[in-house]
Length: 414
Image (tube, rainbow, N blue to C red):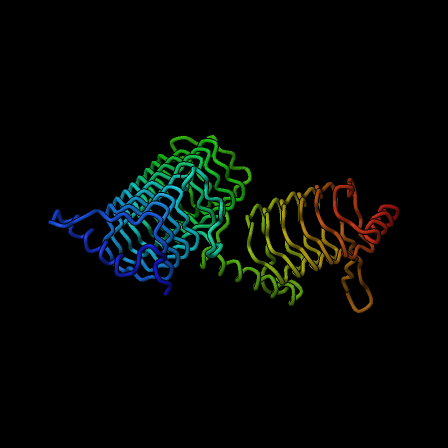
């Protein structure tokens, strides 16, 4: 444990805290604690009562404040990087501009807390532009009570807010990119112009909430009843509805296993998998055996299909934006009218698939890419001997000479 930096020693700190308790109890000799710009690292302050204390600009990194009383405390610009604040009482605390990277507010009381952005000014009016040194993850606010909290314009990226109560919270213009908000209660909350790109809102309660102008690119809205919103002019076309619950993933795993059984038995047993209009965005299907699978109008935005066996599969009208098909087997696959923007096909095999019909007969199936968008797609190192490309422009994709030669040969043969 590092000692408190001068001019305050640990003994002086405990003295200030003792006087603060007297002040809270309106007893003689009491004085409100002013610990502004205090520097602590790795100190245990479990259960301490700092209600209404001044901690403006304090650096309390990696500290243990579990169960502490911080009700009404002034924590403006406070650095709480990596600190444990489980079950703390931060009711109506001022946390504007606080640094919360890697901090843990699990089951904390943050009702009415102010977490809007703030700018701590140092002596002379200079602004502190140094980034905090702690871990690079967002705060953990799992099951925290943020009812009525003020988070307008706040930046809380990659945080864990799953199961939290955020009823009537002010989140307008907040940046919640990549945040986990599964099962969150957002009843009456204001999320206008909020950036929820890549966030998980699975099964969130949004009755009476406002989502006007919110950014929902890649946001998972499965189980969310948008009809219960008070206002929603947000564009949901790039949102997703993926069931990545343990139960949902088990069902998907069972479907793929049944499909593999169908493939191995030559269609005698098992069931061919069909993902018609299914949303598999962001799921990890790397290495999966999906030979002959049907993907019709399916969404696979950012899906990991690295090394997957997709020979003879059919992709019609699918959205694979940003998917990873590095070194995937795509022999005899049909990609028709698909969005393949930014897809990684590095080292993928687009060759011809030979299917043996009997002991003496076999049939060749060439891979077909037709009328697909391929801007920023990466085909470097892909094997494309026999590939047929129709109504295609590869000038905006990343390709090598060997791939282009194969495409031209396929066009000539077609």
